[in-house]
Amino acid sequence: WLDVGAHYGYTAFALARLVGPSGRVFAFEPEAASAGCVEQGRVLNGLSQVTVLPFGLGAPDSLQVRRLPVTRGMADATRSPDPDAWSTAAPIARFDWLWPLVDGADGPIHGVKIDVQGMEIEVLEGMRDALARWRPPLVVELHAGVSRQRLLALIEALGYSSHAIPIEPEPRERAPLFLDDRSYAFSPVP
Image (tube, rainbow, N blue to C red):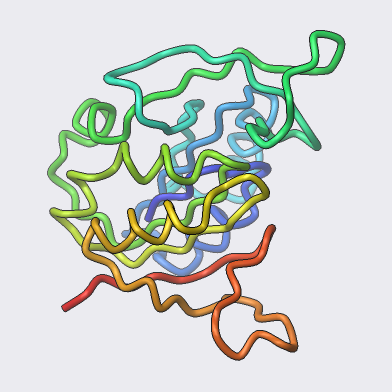
């Protein structure tokens, strides 16, 4: 499983318990202090199946460093850059470029969770090849400023149904409303 935007690791640790000791979870977190917390939590909990990668994912050709504002320990592309605010020099890589270097591109991907504070479309663009090859289910948390129309068009272009399932639906959410700070599950089209 991929935990893209691992923050302090709570989802990565839950996934590690789901996949068990023979499974693998790759936790991507570009904010160095937060990635360090995930690594420390991994060690303290004896989760050898978790690999912490101090990278953000996006759509550059290979690797770039981008200065991003930091909010509550997260690199946050939804916020305007402020020279007086806390920011991080985040290494951002295209998943399709990075994955062969990390895994040799041999291991299948069984699921992807994406919570990347406004970089959802970039992350999906950078995963085109992997998503086409393994067609894993996707869980995407949406954020302010992300065009729902562009995101849903991309989801469909990648071979997924735009008829998502809300993970924790609002009481009024009978069909997905694609609300800010809410996660939605997308399945590949058969």
